Image (cartoon, rainbow, N blue to C red; front, side):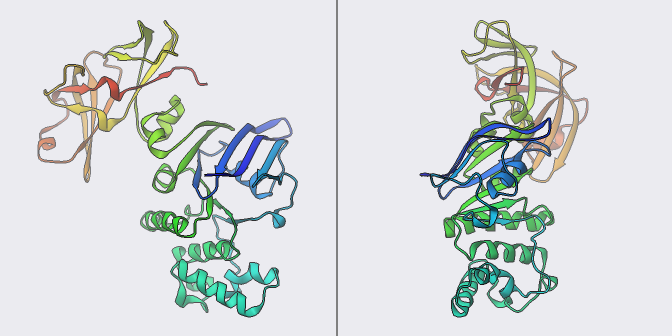
Amino acid sequence: MTVLLELDAVSKSYGATEVLRPTSLEVKDGEFLTILGPSGSGKTTILRLVGGFARPTAGRIRFDGADVTNVPTHKRPFNTVFQDYALFPHMNVARNVGYGLMLRRRPKREIENRVAETLEVVGLSGMLDRYPSQLSGGQRQRVALARALVCDPRLILLDEPLAALDAGLRRQMQLFLKSLQRQVRTTFLFVTHDQEEATTMSDRIVVMNVGHIEQIGTPRDIYYAPASRFVAEFFGDNNILGGTISDGRLQCALGAFPAPPALVEGSAALAAIRPEKVRLGTAAEPADIVFTAAVIDVVFAGAITQVLLRPNASPEAIITAKLTSGAAIGSLAPDASVEVRIAREDAVILPAASP
């Protein structure tokens, strides 16, 4: 894919407060890129800078090779879908969707045709005459998407557009958004604090923390190979074990894990282990780390059961295992003693200090 949008050492400060450190980022033409992070991480600041709603303190923003850093919002070839939808309550669906085309003084017949085509794409063909107050939350969101799509932008900015929806509708809209993006092949730049949204929809994810990028990668890359403790703890669940690098391995209370060569001998490091990689039982492979632990609690969550464990060799630690629910798990109970095994290759070894 070619690069459509480029941020070159872009930063933003308000007085003495730097909310976005110098950040460089490339968005590829036709991809679904999500900027993920907690409140205050800088993700919305990036979206505002790209959309022209704020000006960077330093750095340049390029679109399709052209510098758009100082181009006004209304002259940028982007459209934005906001969290609150920003629909005009006095306009029906057809007029809301066609508003951008009306501002461009397109012929009436062209507007009618484009509005009808776009509403069909988002599944709202029969609702041209309804008003926003007559629509559900999901329908209003689709109207906002249709309004963003109708002018054929090459980039759509989405500012937490699913945040106001209930859990069930949010999951439906996640699948719809990804399917829509593949259908129209428009580049989506999506901002969210929700890991499930990012995982479900994105081609790539940018993980933000306190004004800088912690990691960029596919959802699978970030899930299984976090680059820092922040990413390991923010993106899904991880068991974190502390230790020291010795002879090329992380030595911790539960055993030794192979460490990457970049970690310095004698330095503090961490092992990050996904709960679904923690197994219970006696059938261990020779290379597994095996230890005995006491069951603290067993939490049934439908298809998955979460088991909290206290290793005998490290009573201050708590290890979480996520297991497929079944009859065998029913025999687990608090205070039971179990054998736990972890494959050494399932641990991601990270420096203890933040980069």
